[in-house]
Length: 199
Image (cartoon, rainbow, N blue to C red; front, side, top):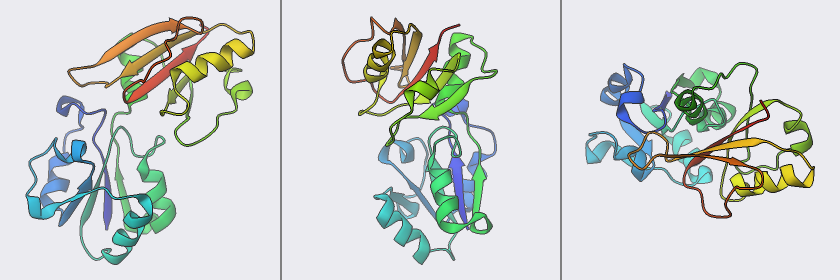
């Protein structure tokens, strides 16, 4: 059985109660170096997250073991939980929810999530015409299509939006910035989520 364990944005006080029992019962815990560093886990039970092709092979060969796969944010909101279920079927997978970085950012700003369109630019090309038809959008981004690129797409269409960018959310280095499409800086944004609104 594979348990995909949502661990929230990163801070331990934002992890849902009960996560420790999954770690205690696991034969093996898989995650990134950063994720594994959040917990006290015996070295013999830890495995750093490999590339997805290797991860698929490893999980297939170890389905008889109790495996916990750590997932930042919420596993089923543009997270690895979707990939695990697609590859191994829901009968072999248990997903434990977590607080998503998008959800956390909305709450930090005191903005309602009602009627928000949720999406991601991570490894994909968004349809910006469709996306910008919505009043409010919450988006997980990557280094290819991040806040600056989003702003350029808004400008190309002659539209105006307020853009909130949350970086390293829930970590001590957390940074939340407010821009318009004209003021977004062209720089690297660290582990970020974006809210786009014309409200």
